[in-house]
Image (cartoon, rainbow, N blue to C red; front, top):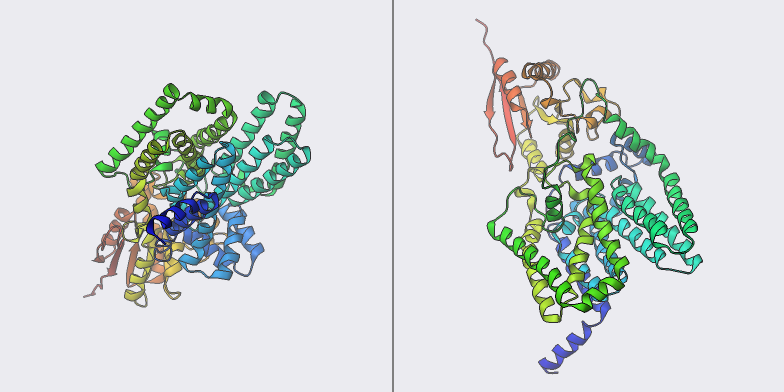
Length: 556
């Protein structure tokens, strides 16, 4: 067979829709498997895994712990528990649960946008972009529930769209039932599913009131019953969610909530859109990356104007498919608006936009739809420009981050201490939520304590606390950063009290400081109590460890 015939057969093969979506899924899988087994767990992944391991044989105890301490819905932890039972606790095994749902996001996006835009090419192109999109790869590799509840959010969007475009009453009832089930699953995975549900339910409400020409009352009644069932189905967990929200407004042992009270930047929506498409964990990027993004934005906006002015077919398509266009824009905008006024929209971590991850999918679908309105040559150029704008961000996301981000260095720090630790030493971390992460990798015989909260002299004083799980007050210290509250003298007094207790109780010869942000107050205590620093910070990211030794005093 000649080379020309091989090319011809290949072209015919990949004209088939099924072959293309399989190829796209394989591309998505290849990106999502890079470094999956190499990168150590980071803090929040360890938090999930340690809870599952601690309550390995007590599912009821785990659910109770989540309600009373973590106040998270239990479904992701249940998924993770049984997944780890089957495939093990290694990084790749645990994270592969997210990989599977990440591939599911690609496929459901394809069938959703193929139907919404009535355009198979738009569905295929959207799926391809999602396969290589940095933020989608990031959360498809992370042992957290974000990509999973995004998957169920897409299913809810799909079933709602099918419902609104189906006339057969029995089928409509069945689709409404599917919408209820996927919404409840999403809610029991993570509270942030609320952003998705608000967008979907409000679109349906507007459809029933303003779009539906006949039987408006019947449509509204179905809408009301459907969401009442979702409310009743989630009511058991809703109590815990409201309890957590009310709790955040009150002081606990004199500590007000400090995280979540900051104002948002003026460029909030600009940053949100950029992170959805050009995800970066860094506060700065290279000039060439900025130029590539700017060039694509300029050409994309110009392309929209061009189509409106010179393409009557495009304008006709918009008019004929206005419900689908509005649907996609609605689900892109509404979650962003409600996210703005939520506590989750505070930049408490480098990437906090994970709560509205679904926005990235609908933004990408708009880009894909615009591209498909051009002829093959122009479409090819636009696709290349878009891929060029995201390539460096995608490559950064899939590289091994354990050498550049401190959150991934927990295992290496613990291994360093495991090798250097001597009997009588004490490992001290700044906040309790770091203590459990470090404990995951430390030897069981190593004593590890946290400085904050200072009024908890021992974690055993806290409800449901253990070496590997946070107690109620320890968990609340996530959002009540005690080290930043009060005048300097009061903060120093709290640190002195806790350090005096630790020295008296454990009489350590050496104290290891790990991931410390409050070193100034501790340094003062060490200098006044005859301790010397024998090991400075090895590297603030690579090895954030210090060590102090007790100086012997000789009595004359």
